[in-house]
Structure formats: C-alpha cells, structure tokens
Image (tube, rainbow, N blue to C red; front, side):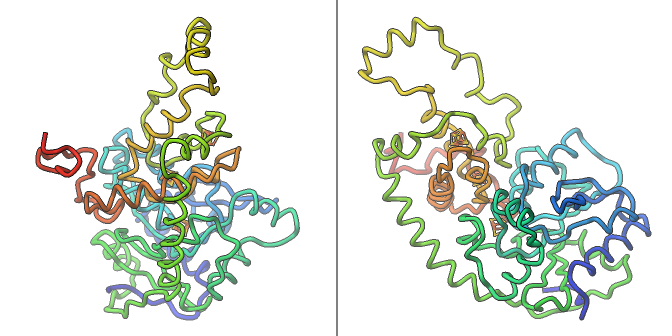
Length: 367
Ligand code: SF4
Ligand code: SF4
Ligand code: SF4
C-alpha cells in the first residue's frame, strides 16, 4: 500500500490542513463535506474558500439526510468539467459513487474521492438527542472508534465490512493510531498526484486491517440468518411491511435510486374509486395504501445488485421498518449470484446492465 504518514496530529486537524493547502495551491475548487452550525448540528456544504474550513467536520458522526453520493451526483451530473471538487465520504458512500458512475449519474473526472475510515455512524435521531443532552457526538464517535465499541451505531454499521473503501482516490485512515496521526493511502493516480503536489513524499506503508471486521463477519452471518427467517415467503414479507405507509422516504434517500420519476410515483398508481370498490370484495380484504409490496419488490429488483448496504433507507423510515434486513439480505444474495460486489471497481459491469443468454440457467431452465 502506498501513502503518506502524518504523525502526531489530531486526524481532523491533519485533514483540514491538507485541504487548506490544496485550496491555497489552487488544486481544489471546492470541498463537499459537513459544516458545523453553532447549535452543534451539522449539514452538508460545498466549501469554496479556505477560511470556511475551520467549520468543516472531517469525521462526521452521522449521515444526515442524503448520502454524500447523492450530493456528488447532483453537483456533477450535468457534465461538470470545472475545477476539481473533493468529497469527504464514508466507505459506503464512496461505493455508492462508484455504482452511480456506472449508470452515468456521477462524473468521476473532476471529483476527488476522499474516503474517511469508518466503523459506524449514529442514527440521526440519536445524534440530535446527544446534542440536546449536551454530549459531543463527534468526541463520542472517536472514543468509540478507538475502543472499538460499536453498540450505539446504526444497525447497518454494526455489520458493515468496510472500514475503508475498496476503490477510492484517497483513504484517510486514523483509527489504529488512536488520535495521534493520519495515514493517507493514495489509492489512485489522482490521489497520488494530489499528495505529491502538496509536497508530501508518497511511500510504501504497511497495510493494517482492523480486527473488529472479523467480529462483524460473525455478526453479519447471524443477521442474515435472522433476515432469511423474517422474510421467508409472501406472508412474512406482507407482515414485514404491514406498517408501511408508502411514503417513499426510503427511496428518496437511497443513493442508488436515481430515476427522476419513479414508476411507483406515476399516475398509473392513482386509482379511481370504482377500481377500489371492485377490488375490495374480490380480495376479501384490501390493504391500503395499495401497491406498497410491489413498490418494495420493484425497488429491490432494480437496485439490489448495486445496494451498498448503507442502511439509510431504514434511518429514513418514519415507521421504523427494519429495511436493512430486507435490503442487506437481497444485496448479499443477489450480488453473490453474479459474483459482483457493489462499489468494488469502477470497471466492473453492473449485473442489471448486462445480460448473457447462458446465465442463471438453474433458474431460467436455459430458455
Ligand atoms: S454502513 Fe459502513 S461505511 Fe457506512 S457509515 Fe456505517 S460503518 Fe460507515
Ligand atoms: S436500499 Fe437501503 S441499504 Fe441499499 S443502498 Fe439504498 S438506502 Fe442503502
Ligand atoms: S420509508 Fe418506511 S413507511 Fe415509507 S415507504 Fe419506505 S418502508 Fe414504507
């Protein structure tokens, strides 16, 4: 592994320092990251001057609202070709950017992917509670990282296998250093050149995997087994989604769901009264809102092979439906079927865009 070791510094200061230098030297035109409000809350912001960087939160304790992957897509989809913009991302967000690039939803050309090492984030409501209770979520997060305690993190995080992104321009690693330093892995040519232009000398460094990932492997296995049981068959799937109000929040925040108009939001699903009156006696019971199961299955069909298991769908659900169980299970099984890993490699073709006559014959019977 090649990279740069910046010793002794608080990793947050080291990241801010690097970014300030990059702006001063004109290497970056903007930085997409979180900005702190006076209240302690944070929000996504496109930094365009080095003076503002004192308010940058480089190691965010939460993914608030939209994923940085979605925001990266919004700011580059219209063929952006200006100055380079760096984005501070969690590993799941970087994987989502890679997936979006395969569907022409993000332009990687002028983006610099800076992935911040991660062992988890808080649920946005827990984050707000912490602030209201006078606790600093940022400090608590770091304490948890350094002691490898992940009980307070979101469910998807507790079984996440990616403390770093498999593909990124830079991976910013600090957890094993316990607050004293930063390792900047230069994982692409673009990342390498940035560090060189900043005056750092890129060297061969030792690659250390965090031992906590082994514990998570077991936890993930148990989680998937439970999900398989909870979702075994149509009746259980109906029961699983019975409280769903079809609000589509889960779709709205999903970094992989990018269609401008969703089929399930189309007029087709605005039925006239007569149809309800005809359906109801036929069905014996008529679950409203209509089409919610079709919505979830349709969504799963479209994006489970690119799902990066971030769990943001579950965080956004006002009915606390355990969507991570549903999507992580489907992502795991469907991606394994195609020997595919979402976000692993920008050159890997997404299964939903490729069709081979001879594939999955055990299901299609070769027809
Ligand atoms: S899902 Fe993984 S990468 Fe994303 S915030 Fe949670 S632990 Fe970090
Ligand atoms: S379906 Fe849920 S877990 Fe999968 S990418 Fe979308 S928000 Fe993340
Ligand atoms: S966010 Fe929750 S309630 Fe809304 S559509 Fe999704 S599963 Fe249903």
